Image 1 (cartoon, rainbow, N blue to C red):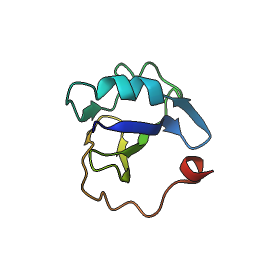
Image 2 (image 1 turned 120 degrees about the horizontal axis):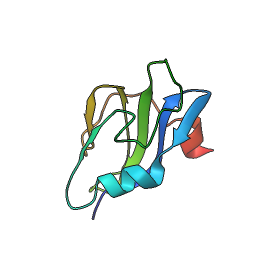
Image 3 (image 1 turned 180 degrees about the vertical axis):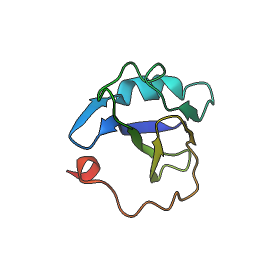
Image 4 (image 1 turned 90 degrees about the vertical axis):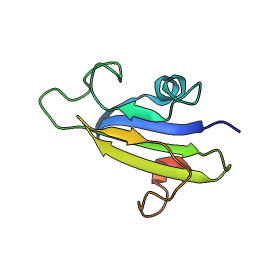
Length: 93
């Protein structure tokens, strides 16, 4: 089973780009790392502000996971718990 991206948002809580389809393409062919920057995520949704990428996904184990990272960092999508509490409202709503 491959990783299935449920939702991915890049930006600020109230000013973001939906990058779900873009991130799904990035994790094809066993790639599980995502560089978090404007170039890799298709543009700058909040010029002059530090942004976050939040990804909710189903792992190889079929279970839901969520990971978040800051602009300028890299995240790894794994089947291990990431320590983020609960599912975000936009995932379950």
